[in-house]
Image 1 (cartoon, rainbow, N blue to C red):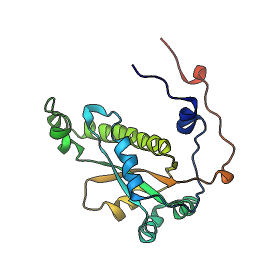
Image 2: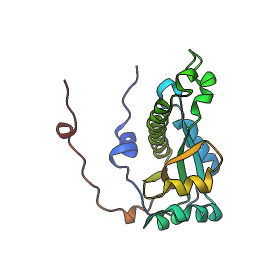
Image 3: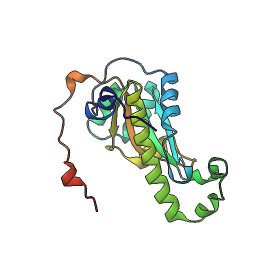
Image 4: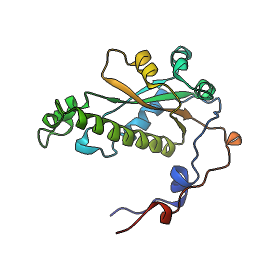
Length: 196
């Protein structure tokens, strides 16, 4: 039987965690990025499909390659962040299913079934992106997920000729708490939930 996390842990993951837009000049090591992924990969996905793929943009040259896809203030945010992850999904994720889900032939459910492929890659890839952000927070990092970019431009610049497609971007590092805006409200349980 599991026990609840301590209040401080819940604060770090949820109630006190913030989306950051400004970053301290502190690097994030490749080893720490691997540690974050190795924690996040255990989150559940349907048929263990695990369609998320990630590209970590760190070098000035790679950030410059990403810049034309960014909208508005996201240019400066990416420039300042130690790492920008392109959270992507693999349109051919089902090719790994014989190894990832050996209980039965799950691959055959997907081959030629474009609606199921699209639904599974987007839903489960997005879930995995959320697991990744929580894993990063649990290991002491801050995150700043972003939608303000052109997916087609990112895909052409980084994934041309592959089966990977971008989903969303996420800056990673140590956020500058002095530049946070007041926290936005959330819906109450009564406003967002029903029990039937």
